[in-house]
Amino acid sequence: MPNVIAINAQASQSIIAAQATSDDMLLESIADGNRTAMHILYCRHNVRVYRFILRIVRDATTAEDLVSQVFLDVWRTAGQFQGRSQVSTWLLSIARFKALTAMRQRRFEDIDQEDVRQIADGADTPETSLDRSDTSAILRACVQKLSPAHREIINLVYYHEKSVEEVGQIIGIPQSTVKTRMFYARKQLADLLKCAGVDRFAA
Image (cartoon, rainbow, N blue to C red; front, side):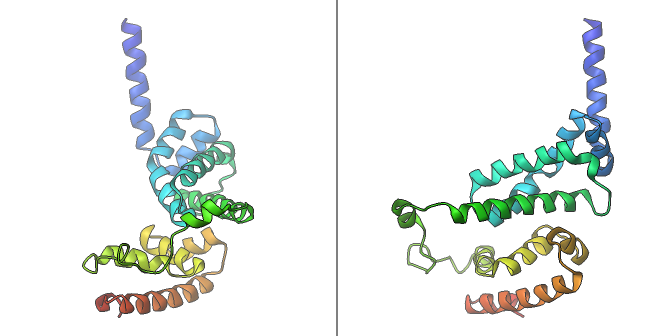
């Protein structure tokens, strides 16, 4: 019995130590096959990765499947991480690739008539029109009306708080292009918000 208690105490200390470890050090441990480190990294980042993917694929089940794929890739390729970016940036790069691949595959799938009938009409109706007092809901709706490229920039900068440099790394474009897209994305979003009656965010 004392041996069991000692083993449990040792396991708890190992988990506490891993929780205090940086993401980079966790990846080094994962590359050596450390499952506890993998668990800690997953707990730290799975929600962020899920929300990022969900904004691209707009399907919860698909997003959950892709999150599993992302962390499976991390388990397999942790040793290839070279530390040129933050681990969170690297994770979102993998997530973006998985999400875009899933979207491309979805476009080639046949859509039967029942699916077509279930696709929501983008136009506002009395039943689906937004409550104008709910500014955050209006903002989310306006962001969804942006082009995919502009929506992606807004998503990374404002929701995931990534720098211009990190956004460039995730998407694979020059920083100057990130800045250009950000300028036009903000301009378009300001126009959409103004049309929605949210003038104070449209400046």
